Image (cartoon, rainbow, N blue to C red):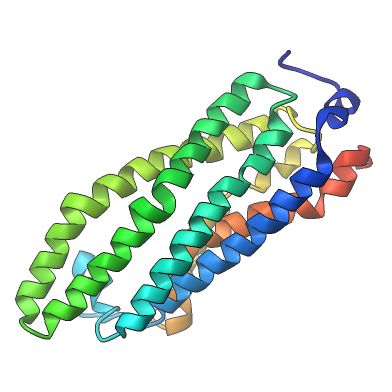
Length: 239
């Protein structure tokens, strides 16, 4: 059954479990954001460009900061992906096809978000910083090679699953396959793209650079917090 009335749909949803997942999702995304900001707190060198600009910001940060960022980011991003099953539970009773597509996006986020994107990113910063003490030009070259050969392919694949997650969620809410009104389609992680653009426009200050590094985490905080805030009304159908 691909369509249900709001009352039928609401009755099939375990709202207690959904809210627990949303709360844990917020906590996980905040942990991930903390890891991103620990790594990203720095000032860009305006004379650098491209990937050199990216690595230049991290020059000189301690190994402890890199390791702490990697642990927090890995745990937080993985937890955020798992808690996307709260949204899956909202979609599944209304549309099995949309739920299946959304689940594919979740698996991609879980598999690649922490271990495939954030952890290799931290590793690249670690390699760059330690090699920079020996030879600056070699450090940059090796870091760029690592980024191109290992980081970018994983990040590209991650973006495919991330795009599936966003598009399916927005479409499911817009088509009212969930108990939420269609305007709640705004509660998707896509808001993170605007956060990234705004922070880059404001860029230069350490705070803006740190928030720019946490763009994905901010998107998940927005999604989980928004859906949690509207969950009581969605359960009762009182909009």
